[in-house]
Length: 477
Image (cartoon, rainbow, N blue to C red; front, side, top):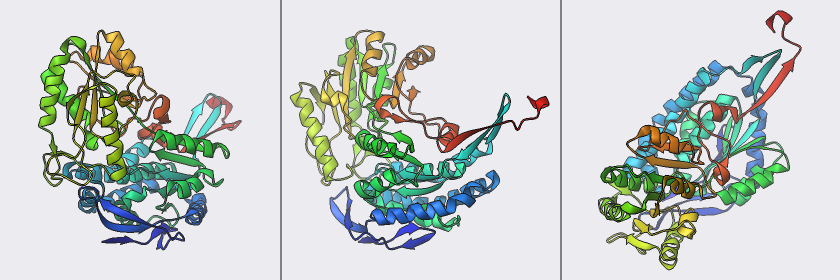
């Protein structure tokens, strides 16, 4: 049994002021495997004070010094990749291959931030002005449970690159992963107070971070509903806010696509991270005259998807994170049937031979865009097949959502796919695959968020812009 009894403030592991204990579960079995003592509002205030105290000196550190720190952070997390992957499987239920990828991604976030920083100029000339980019201040970094370590490391790496100090509020459901990451970050030896980690509830610790006047910036990844509440709370003190929120990503299979290749690719996209991914392509749009073939191939593709046996290299889908999420997905599957969609494969209940929080990979066909299973983010391995009669209608259906985080286009004609991509309302569009570029901006249109993360765009979200006039010599104008 794990017992996690410390948070991290001012460069030290300290017992929290908060007295509440939170149970940790293994999603594969549903059994309690540990508990974590949660921070409270006083802990959040103390962490903010530590970050605020460290900010004046850290904000004046050189680019070279911050690159060196980022490199040390990478080395420290990289040394714990194996432990972190095991914890992600045990605590979150990720298949081993996904957990290993996620652990490596967490470590590499620091190298990616260092690469961005190396080529970035904090001072530039614009006509007669000198424009200076300065760190915004203390940043609150709030991370979700579906990729906790990766979000901690990516957000912190960007804050450090910018010269900001940080208070991190990770998900309380990911405390084992958080402890491993915290140990690594501590080992890197940054100045005390540069980063602080307080595991607690969103309505307590998150609320303090959202309203405290000494927090200048919030970077939040999570649900759209919570993102809206953070935006409202932060408005009183005019906090700078980056929100990466929900999604209902479309996968457009164009009418010239090879279905034998396209359908398995679409299913894989929709089931990534066991469906617990804001970028999952959960709406598959297909030509109406090819619908029967798509249904046949989708059923075939799902039948080859391995569920469970998390240590096996070919396992693709693990359990939902907890009982609440399991019941949420079951409810949407019921609703899909009630709304008149055709159940192609899957359905309610556990897959054969599995308990815990596993759900059956499920695909619905004859779905229309007004059904709740097509409109709302389910956050599980549940896919919807929608049909279209023309390319114009396909684009209209794809854009007919309040979300706009990511989209996928499949076609052998790359120029045609690019033309379609240019008309999709999404922060990222992936053509013929599931590519990721950690230096390119990531974020959403519409209710999928505000602002961007990664690379230069992510760095500048932690910077303020100052124009200095009258300091440029006349001959330099």
